Amino acid sequence: MPTPPRSPRSTAAARRRPQPPAPRRAPRRPAPPERRPRWGMRAVTTLSVVVLASAGIGHAVMTSLDADITRVDPFKDMKNRPQAGHGMNILLVGTDGREKISKEERHKYRLGGAPCHCTDTIMIVHISEDRERASVVSLPRDSYAVTPSHVDRVSGKRHNGHPLKLNAAYAEGGPQLTVRTVESMTKVKIDHYLEVDFTSFMKTVDVVGGVPICTADPLKDSYTGLNLPAGRHTLAGGQALQFVRARHVDGASDLGRMKRQQRFMAALVDRLTSSGILLNPMKFRDVTRAVLGSVRADKGFGTDEMLDLGRAMRNFSPSSSEFTTVPIGRMGYAVKGVGSTLKWDAEKSERLFHALRHDQPLSVHRSRGAARIVPVAPQQIRVQVENGTRTAGLGRRVDAALASTGFRTTKAPVNSATRDARRTIVAHDPRWDRSAKSLAAALPGSELRPVKGLGPTLKVIAGADFERVRKVRAEDPGQGEFGVVRGDEVACS
Image 1 (tube, rainbow, N blue to C red):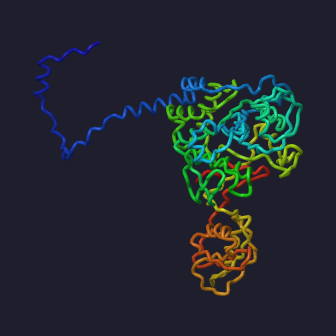
Image 2 (cartoon, rainbow, N blue to C red; image 1 turned 120 degrees about the vertical axis):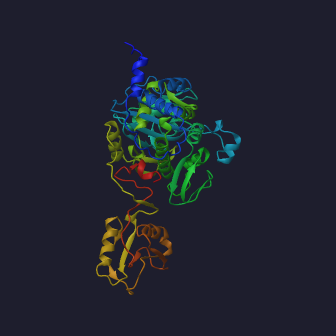
Image 3 (cartoon, rainbow, N blue to C red; image 1 turned 45 degrees about the horizontal axis):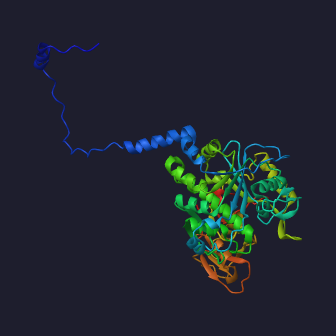
């Protein structure tokens, strides 16, 4: 019911009543400038939260992108497949596709020559059933494989099973023979197939603003044109392609390249999950368009599956991902008519794929604290400790501290010839300078001193400035029987 208006009499009476004294007011300050309500920012933030909370990255956005994906049917008429396990297994295949890149870029990034129509990279990506872990297993392209019987996609002739290198299965029978061969070798049922070429890779890296990579050593490969000094770099699409394709950086060839690919994937996950891209539907749409614009996928990998992965990615961090390469039992395994191949270690690889089939993590997480990355692992460095002061027991304390962080000390510290060292010294033969730098990194403030002819055992002369030994770790911290690394162990810290 509306409130009736006051009568003039009652209003006048109120004016005649004695009023209490007004409270003493503080001196007036200049009014702050008027703040405009940030409704635009709030609306965008709210929209992002609502969209992501309800549908991961937006059903309408992903439905529109679904139509742009080129479809293949790698599972057509497949029989006697492995039993399905828990979680989701995606066969991620990287193909050549250099014919889609401009002539200028092919020249700049050393992509000359004809495309090979084969797989450059093969990985099984396992997403755990609880969507909180991703396990990535690289399958070397030179792996010794035996194909099931199949029809050659070029000649149309039927072939019985025969040996070949794993990457050649794609050339003979396309995605279907690739999937069948991988399932036959691993006994892991593949749920989805994704095929990415050079173009989609480069576009993805560019649209996220580049990917940070850290390296303790310079990386140079004349074949791809890669030339990275030691340190931290943000790689754009073309340079990132050089990084993941390089095979002549060291003697590890294809195995070394796969480790760099794993490091790059960990860095890309870190970039996606830490930059806010997944919290911005429009930015995520741009990233997804870059990826899916030149991707081929199986017919079952549609909107719902992409949304499922989008929800999982929201909770991902570098520590949620783990990377390894299938264990190799024999390098340079010669096969008539095929050439030199890599033969898997039958027992170790079976245990690895058993873990994937049963949705088990490949490694136990180990907290590494704030360990500094060094070029040589402490376990490979032998150290003789000398006490360069008159402080009793300092040599034993330094020896024990180095040993506890992984260095191979002699466990027999001695007194130095001179006992007035103010600064801790790392004496080393110049031929072992990388080991010396790794040891010096563990001794903050120490001085490197080259001594010709000292040999492989490094010498630490503990000075009065010694306080502690800092934890260090190698750039490639593979652990366990499968050499597994986690994303937070290989991404830039």
